[in-house]
Amino acid sequence: MRPEILRYQREVVDVLYTWAQSPKAVAATAGLVPVEQITKPEVPADDAGLDAWREYHRQMVFWIDWQHDIEVWRGSVESRLEGLEEVTNLIPEILERLGPQTLTSDHQRAVQKYADIPDQDWPRVVQWFRAQLEPW
Image 1 (tube, rainbow, N blue to C red):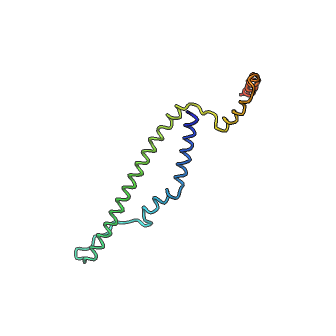
Image 2: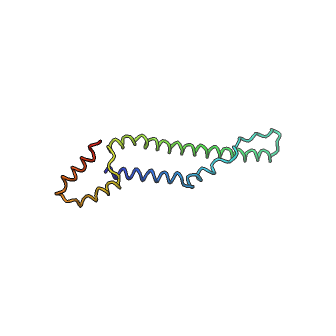
Image 3: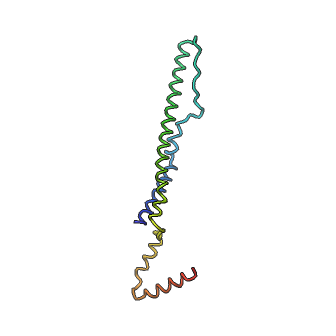
């Protein structure tokens, strides 16, 4: 199970990194906030004409919609961050359960090449490994 979980973790990191670097991830927030800050429109004078009041209310709707969009975006960001925090908090526990890292896939393939060693030569293999590990 450990090699499979480690492989899965590496794949997840790669997929998340690719997603975060994709133009779609950047484009999703690109149009959210205008280049210039949207300010609350000023209330026209009491004696202003209907056109001035009409324009004021149009701008207010635009300003309120913008505030709503920002709040929705903030909520989605906070929700995603909470989910990431939960996953991040689980990583130490998962790593502890996995125990020490095993051989990498490349190293495992290299070791498999030794499967052709005759059983009668096993004592020589053990002796060679001991000689390699003695300095450590």
